[in-house]
Amino acid sequence: MTTPPRRRADARPPARRLRVLPLALACALASFGARPAGAVDWAVGGEGGYFGMNASKSAKAIFDGSSGGGTYGGFAHFGLGQAFFVEVHARSFKRTGERVFVANNGAPIFPLGHPLTITTVPVYGLVGYHFLHGSRWAPYVAVGGGATSYKEESDVAGLAESQSTTKASAHFAAGVDFISGPIRVGAEVGWSTVPNTIGEAGVSKVYGEKDAGGFTVLGRVAFGSRAP
Image (cartoon, rainbow, N blue to C red):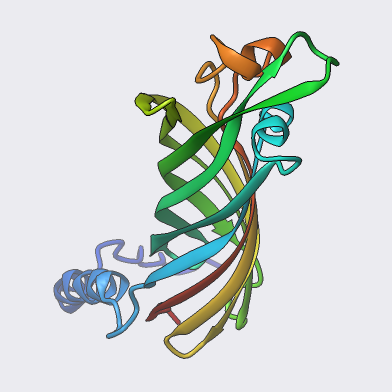
């Protein structure tokens, strides 16, 4: 028995399908590119806490046993999607001690009675990653770089002396923010390195310390908006 020949299915889509495809593609692109109101993750705030210098032996000699002191500054935060972000920071540390004489590493420290003020101002950017997406708790890690200004000012027998330099710096940070509406409250620990900034003269040369960076323990408060 002979079977009738089968008709081959037409592979071409109907004309109406051809008209619908461009419209569907346009709608998909529009929905992908659209951002709901308030979706931008941004914040501006202040931070403050403790800065401990990497050149700890020099700092302890100058500051009578302390390796650092208070620091404060501000920052701006910008989100990149749900996980990544960038931040820009500027912070200041300033403390007055006195010049000392140390014959060699391990020798007794002799205060000279001349005031010595050290000021550092790091300005830097960070790229970071947030964990616990969608939670009010936002732990994060970040790394970045910038420039740090280092300045020494002293008064020796009425003669004012000042030395300053600016060097490239690297920065690392880890912390956690608690986000409640537009308010963010958090804590952060960080570390920075500013190599070859000191160590050419004075007590830092005796101790062989050249890095003007250090560690920070900070509290921070910010106002902003978070993407959903």
